[in-house]
Image: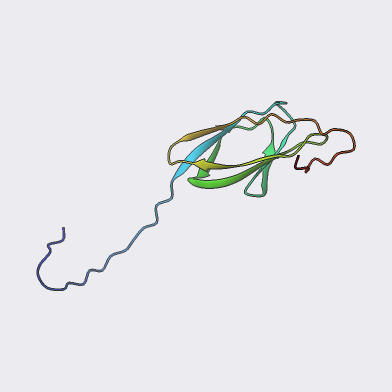
Amino acid sequence: MVEVTNRPIVLKAKLTKVITHGMLVIKTEPAAGITVYVDRKKVGVTPLKPMKLRSGRHYIRFELEGFDRWHRYVEIENDGTHPLNPVMERTPPGKSPFRME
């Protein structure tokens, strides 16, 4: 308890950083074999179990040989669940999977 008076007071306190988490649930099409990256780090290949991530913005990327690369920023909310359902598209012959059309 702190009592406020008409004179200056000095308080000493120890602050504790609160880290919150949410869940990212990924369901891809095709369902298997897609490499998944979270914040540029490989986290596995689909199918994946739901992932617990720190609350905040994360960069999610999906790659599969012969398909265009798929990527998004997602916002993970405290105690929330964020579904992500990318549909991979085949890269046309002679085109780059990194094309911007």
